[in-house]
Length: 269
Image (cartoon, rainbow, N blue to C red; front, side):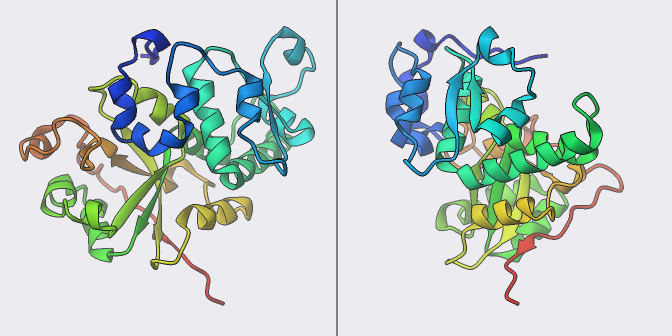
């Protein structure tokens, strides 16, 4: 069933104080209040060096016949629907993580040139899944991956709950659909994760952006690991109760034969 976001005027402002939306407080002026930001407002948040600009999606814009991704690559125009949560959150991702969005766009355009605009390749599916629901997970303790590999959600989110608070594992949301879905308070969020094994000084998102741009990541949807984000402390109102981690519907068992790729690691050569 297609998700329908709540109207802006009925969104509880307290949701913006709870993860994952609380991590985007720097853009509160775009998210709060009844007035929707315009493309002009969004562009005012871009640095002068930005290679892209937000443009209002209308019939005149679409008359150019370009694919959405081609318009970004060729003209630097990000088509953005007015009064639309999905596109507003997409804009926020562009504002915070331009390198990873540029890498996704470049790979999409390469695949469109190879496949044509009406056929989707497996790399395109992987790129789209990550663009909509992706998270970058940085892991400093490999023992956490062993729990994740077997879908031991109780172990990962309850037994090792402190790891999510002390920096042993961390999450950056890249998928704008995840942020949109967070507008529904009780919705169980599940991300599609790329995993990076990091040292404290590493930038996991930058490492992923480089690997995507180089064609080393997101060649197949099976590279992406499911991660029930609602299990992370502070991401769901009920997850401070041990019972949540034994019975919640988003904690699915590992499919027979499913194996996950090794995490991305820093190239020291």
